[in-house]
Amino acid sequence: MKIVLNGEAREVAAETLAALLEECGFSGRVATAVNEDFVPSSLRVGHRLNDGDRVEVLAPMQGG
Image (tube, rainbow, N blue to C red; front, side, top):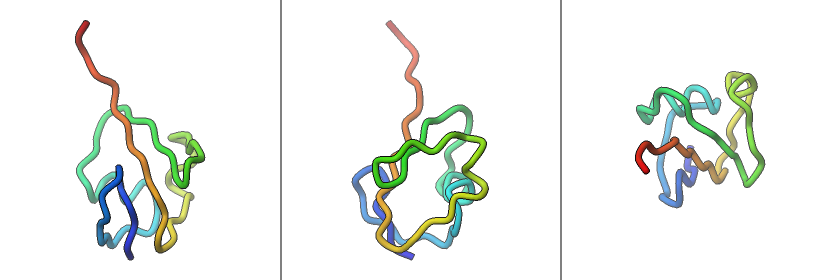
């Protein structure tokens, strides 16, 4: 399916948000939003993606 991940159009096989994170190589603690709605980590496994969804993945940065 076609989605927009962090502003970039992508073709992915994942059907859930958790599967998308794995497919795209995201690991560790990240914050996620789908179509501008925050999705907590506990709900990612059941959060189904749809063609055209806009997904944002943010990772904390270290430094000062």
